[in-house]
Length: 352
Image (cartoon, rainbow, N blue to C red):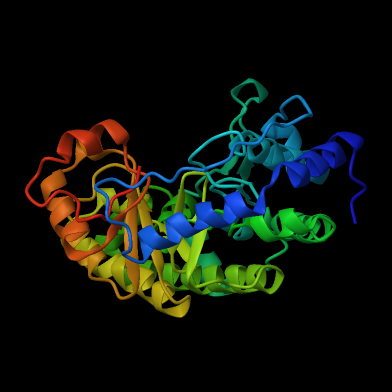
C-alpha cells in the first residue's frame, strides 16, 4: 500500500469523526424516497439535518500533482468530502479522478495535461486519422493497464484499503465509478471529427469501432466492480446527485447527430450497457431535445442529467422525462423554479 502522508491521515481521521451515521442514513433515505417515487414535493433538494464542524485545515491539491501521486489524489478527493459535511445538500463520495481521457488513453491516445495554473483535469488528443483508427479496431480490446488504466485501478485499490481502517468512511463515503464516458463520446474523443464524416462514408467501420469501445467499457467497469461491487439500486455521482441503476453514461457527442444518426450509432450501444449493468442514467451537455424521445425509451433508463436547458426545447424534454416518470437530476435551480408553473409541474420527478 502507498504510505499515506500525515496530512492525508489527519484528513481521514477528521472525516471519520465528522460523519454522523444517523444524519447520513437520513440523507440517503431522502434520496431513496425521491428516486423510488415516495417524494411528494414539487422540486427535490435533500437536507442534511446535522452539519459537521471539521477541525483540520489542509491546503488544496493541484490536480496536476494529484494525477501523478496517489496520496495527493486521495487528499484531492477527500478535501471536498470534509467540505460537504458542512453543507446541507451534497453527497459524500469520491472517484478515481483522471478525466475524460481514461478510456481513450487505453487505446493509445496521447495524454494531454493542462497547464498547471488551470488546475483542470487532463484529457487526450484525438487521432484525427482514420487509418490509425482502423488499426485500433483490428487489434481489439486493449491492455487495461495502459494509459490511465493502471492509475485508475491502483487508486481504487488504495481507497479500498485506506477506507477499510475507518468504519464510517467505508460505509458512507462511496467510491463511485470513474469517468468512463459513453460509447459515442469515447469514439469521438479517440477518433476526432472524422468520425462524423465516416458515419456517412464508412458506417461499418464506425459500428465496428463503437462496438470495440463498448466491449472495452464493459471490461473496464467489470474490473472496477471487482474492487467495489456493483449496486443496481442507487448510486451517487458527483456531489450533487444520486441515481437509480449502476452507471451514469455520457452522451455529449450526440448533440451533433441527427435523430436518425442517434438511432443508428448511439442508442443501440447505450441500450446494451444499460441492460448489461442493470440500469442507470444518461448525462448530456448542449442540445438533446432532438433525440430525447429515443433516449428516454431506452430500457432501464431511470433519468437524465443535463447541463444547459437554455439550448433545449424544455417542454419537449419535460414531456419525455418528468411527465413519463423519469427523473431530471441536478437541474438548474432558477430554471426549475421558473418552469414549475407549467401544467402538471414536474410530477415530483425533478431534483436541483
